[in-house]
Amino acid sequence: MSNRLAVLISGRGSNMEAIVRAAGSGRLQAQVVGVISNRSRAAGLDFAGRAAIPTRVVRAADHPGRDAYDQALDAEIRAWRADYVALAGFMRILGPGLVDRWHGRLLNIHPSLLPAYKGLDTHERVLAAGDGEHGASVHFVSAELDGGPVIARARLKVNPDDDPDSLAARVLRLEHQLYPAVLNLLCTGRLSLERNRIMLDHNPLTQPLELEENGELR
Ligand code: GRF
Image (cartoon, rainbow, N blue to C red; front, side, top):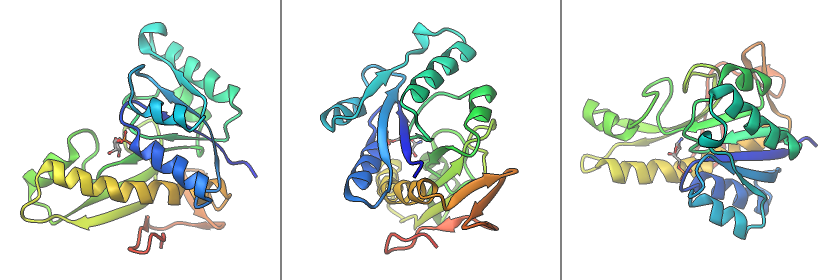
């Protein structure tokens, strides 16, 4: 099975941790072959190290220019013979060359119900708009920021007393269920991207999957 997975982080790495734990328990049939951070102090690197997962730091300062940076990143990922790459709080925009090369094999998680609220500060913006619903999305990465085909979403109700922190914490708990579940579809060969169309079990996916309360995608 092609299920060698590289994870890219920039900070806390709680999604990476959820991915590693899911792989360890068999909920995610993948081998996490390495974790890359663009920041040497990313807290997530400690967890990965303790879990005996190879880690690399690829800093922009050492590879000036987007192409040079992306090439350095690609070289590390390839050295691990990764089949798939999961962006998990990786705070750098990847260039079209890298995105094309990993077309259909590069995923991202974003804390909003895409296509709503691309970009930063999603929890603040949801509260400011007075939305009743919020959540997280996993999508294939395209050249447009947070704009690739959406595979699955997890949603929750916004409470009247929510503030950005409480909302972020609740969305994050959903992210930790959603990302491993979607990656499992990818790593077991059930999910693919064909001519920019998402295919699930060889059928086009006409609308994003939803994470149910029991943790299943429907
Ligand atoms: C998550 O909210 C993720 O959706 C976003 O960045 C955050 C990363 O958190 N892309 P963590 O580093 O996984 O804890």
